[in-house]
Amino acid sequence: MEISKEALKMKMVAPKLAASSIDTRNKALEYIIEGLLRNKDRIFEENRKDMENAVKDNVAASIQKRLKYDEHKLSDSVEGLKQLITLSDPVGKVLLNRELDKDLVLTRVTVPIGVIGVIFEARPDAMVQVASLCIKSGNCAILKGGKETVNTNKILFDIIKESVIKANLPGECLMQVTLHNEIDELLACDREVDLLIPRGSNKFVRYIMENTKIPVMGHSSGICHIYVDEKADFENSINIIIDAKTQYVAACNAVETVLINKKVADSFLLALYKALQNNNVEVRATKEVFEKLAALSNGEIPVPSETDKVKDYEKIMQEEDFATEYNDMIISLKLVDDVEKAVEHINTYGSHHTDAIMTGDDKVAEYFEQMVDSAGVYRNCSTRFADGFRYGFGAEVGISTGKLHARGPVGLEGLVTYKYKLIGNNNIVGDYATGKKSFHFKELL
Image (cartoon, rainbow, N blue to C red; front, side):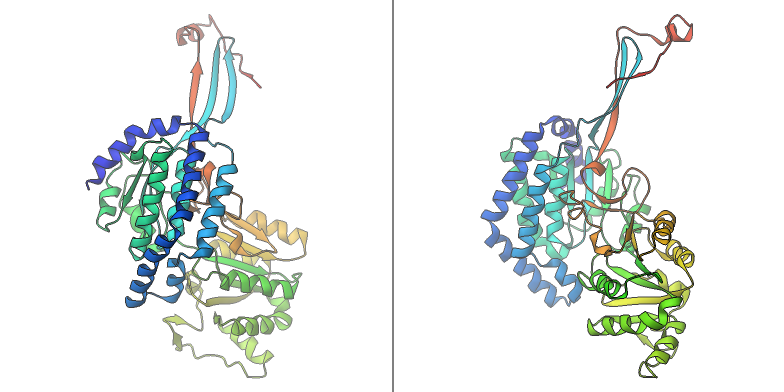
């Protein structure tokens, strides 16, 4: 398959998809639900093949959890689709309606981006999420999933494309890319593809950004923090930290670093450490943290040698080590003087993804929320809430940590842009340049 030729076909049908009615696009989503449920045994069989291959290839256990597509994940996919159907049409919304002159009216209207290439990690449910969001928002989609789920992705894509055609939408609006070398072909399609959304490791996303002229929207890493303030509820903070680390350890919104106010170290640190140990979370920390733990435990918790290493991560952390994304049952701990130092650390070593504060102090919380430069800034809740489904978006096509166009979980609104429409009555600029006519700029309801 020659990617550029297929992408050009998509470019040509993109206006037809953009002009389709919301009822037609929703009908396609309904057909996808029916297809998933009708073919679930076949889907599970294909996923079983992928899981067996993952075991043979010694794929990490945390990644295998992502690969699995079972009744639970199928149910989540269906619920996401149902929620997506209920959302209003993101296309055709009037953002501005302004009379420039009595017979000259300007409107700004939302439109689909066009052709979007999405390269996502080895998660079959991402295939359903990404495709359905693109369909609902009127965008053509080139979909490249991870090789670890090639069998599951294939049957899911076939069900989705069959549903699109059944709803009388152009079949050319969806394309699946399966070979790794086709990624480079896709990166060269800067005249046919309007946007790329990569989902994967820091190294992978950086490669995409550096090897294409196509605009890229995404996040290169998920180094999320929780700061425990001196006015925090300790028991609830520990529950939140455990949830944020262990509920889905491989997710990009799992917490990687906990910052603790020094004023509460004596009363909080040991309890947190024990809770992490009880949940099989391995601790990396500064020497100061381990010395404090040793004192609080009467020497039961030793201060590691600075040369000790486990899984290639230092137990005793240096400052530069805090720029580490584990995606594993490992967490970093550090003591800080106050909220200002916590913010400074987060803005230095974080990835601008999602960061949270545990506190009962409104003033401190407001400072944190204002000063942390991240797409998601939370108070007294888990970082794992950074998710399109949990935001009520139906699903998400990815997480954006940039500041242009879309930020945070990217749902329907992040998949549209806008165009200006100007309706006149034989107007010419010369009349306004000479003063024969003048603009009066009136906002219309």
